[in-house]
Length: 254
Image 1 (cartoon, rainbow, N blue to C red):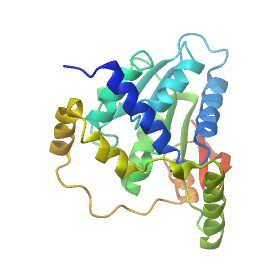
Image 2 (image 1 turned 90 degrees about the vertical axis):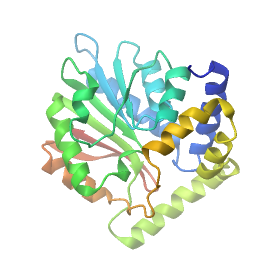
Image 3 (image 1 turned 120 degrees about the vertical axis):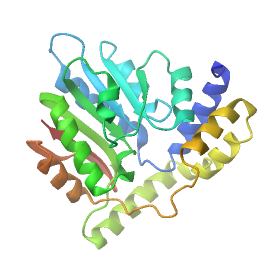
Image 4 (image 1 turned 180 degrees about the vertical axis):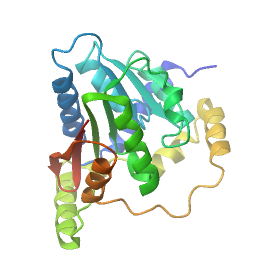
């Protein structure tokens, strides 16, 4: 039995507020990503095809669907609870696919019937190892049409530690001015979710898939490392088109 719309709305709204703690100028970053996809698909015949990598509860997919109502959006995630929130709250925004990015055969599960115009992601690819990220970038380059783009919005530190420190400070001060830290954090959101009986089965499935959370989280790759991996994977150009603090939108062109 699926979730009620009221339950999905409640938890997605709390997710949206919670995420403001972690993504500097989150709404502007979403807008920039939509601007890019709109730009590269303008004037092209047919329906644009976009894949949203690590879609969570559908935050980016819903915004893209609003900006690009002609687009076919395929939204991908491995978390059963977040996917069910997306399917319920943003049912018409995308076709949702339960798969793990970077695993063997993951792109075959997407059911793509033509080359991609764009692959997008926000605050999701940083959990992949460098080898897995390179494989993912290479596979996406093969799936994109010539001139198609991969757009990644995430916190990507600079190689120089002093510049990274200053960029981090800029982002934190911005978040403080926007009162982002007044919202509940990631752990508090999941703790609250665990108290909702309607989500119990989805939480149980989530724990079954990953019974032991990772004890260590790898340090995020630097911006320069991402650009190098993208070029090695077959993208002709790659670079930053928007930045605030250490929050970036990186575009790679096939």
